[in-house]
Length: 226
Ligand SMILES: C[S@@+](CC[C@H](N)C(=O)[O-])C[C@H]1O[C@@H](n2cnc3c(N)ncnc32)[C@H](O)[C@@H]1O
Image 1 (cartoon, protein in one colour):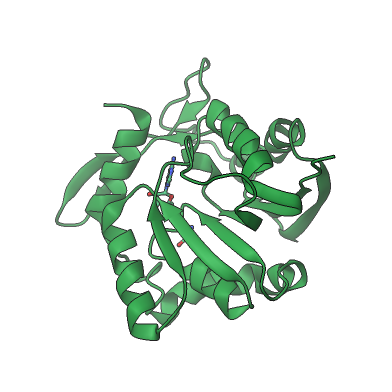
Image 2 (cartoon, helix red, strand yellow):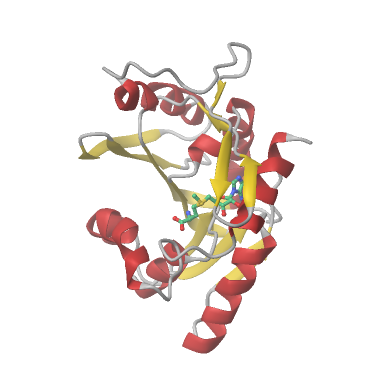
């Protein structure tokens, strides 16, 4: 099974979790953390893309901030829930099935793209291919925001090493048990801020790195087509 198939299978099995369900107030903590920062970047009418949207909490939040928001994810089950919520809320959010390795959008489709805390699922090559795609999909001066933790900061001082570490690919971690459903492969990559910045910056100029909390960072890139 490929890395991508394993992640998709895991998220379809996980379904909609209370901590990510936009209908559940318990899911808002993640949005609250970045809200003030995102509000400064999102202007009314911007076409915004939520990369790896799951059940859409960040997509709905960006719509609430004035954007015309679209979520994309390759797991059908949470996406189906996002569509139901949109219908019930009479939201204009769109939800599309798609893989970040090959996004289903044409040139100049969005003014803003957000990768909220999903970088760990991406092999290094996929972040590079995503950056190349965003250069095309984003408008001139379009913004790409990536939020992440730095794995080295996270594990500093810990005596327990990752479940595994593959020196060729950077793959760490491995499996996750979902109560009553079983244990699923859950591939996760070793990402640092410097490395993410280096890869994306090759294609989209860096505007700033904001430190949100001790180990939560927001990397802001701006697309310059000229
Ligand atoms: C931890 S969830 C976070 C969801 C969402 N950002 C949130 O905060 O609620 C990660 C999501 O990324 C999606 N994902 C991971 N790799 C992906 C890929 N290559 N293409 C599309 N979606 C992907 C998974 O299916 C999952 O729904």
